[in-house]
Each structure stands twice: as structure tokens, then as C-alpha cells.
Length: 124
Image (cartoon, rainbow, N blue to C red; front, top):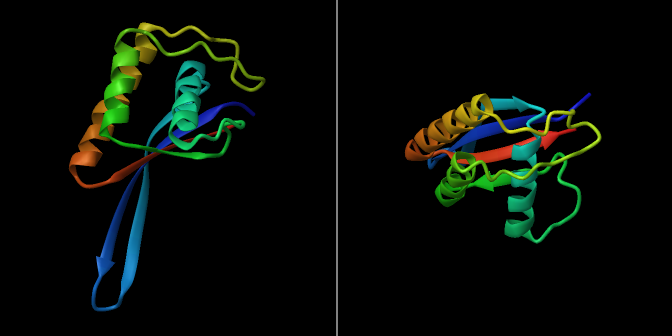
């Protein structure tokens, strides 16, 4: 058991003839026990929704401006140190993690350009 984190790209299409919507949800990025990112996303979720309850198994919709702010926080190593019972012991944010997060942001932007919606969720 532990902190597992996921990013999804969602593509919706509507068929006028059948009056049906098709939704395709693709998992495109995962993290394991990335405490700092979880803290950042929990704060963003609270700011966007007003819900300050425990951030576990909730869905956070991400838009381009969210990615811009996340990139700034990653590049300046301003992700918050975050602790939790199932988050693991490593609260350090290192260069390898920084590169991984920047790769996520790049892929996420590509999905947005292709017309996808983005979601982040975690489970612990």
C-alpha cells in the first residue's frame, strides 16, 4: 500500500446521428510516492474547488494555466514537502524527479493541443 498517482487524457466525441457521446480515457503518466507533487495537487484541488478535506481518490481537472504554474514550481523546486502515512519516507525533490515532472508537463500540453481534457488523481 502506498501513494499511487495517475494522469489521464480524456477525449470526448459526439455522434449526431445516434445522439451518443463516446469518452475515451487514457492513462498517460504515473508516479509512485511522489510526496511533493501530491501536496501541490492537493493544494491546487482545494484552491479550485474550495474542498479542503482529505485529497484521496478525488479527481483534479488540469488546464493549461495549471500546467504553467506547475512548471514554474517544478523548475524552481517549490513543490511543498508533504508527509502522509502511506507517502513513503522520501520527501526530497531531486533532479531526477524534476525531469520526470517536466516530461509529464510536456506530454500533458501535447494532449491539450490535441483537444483532450486532463485529470490527475491519486490513491493511498
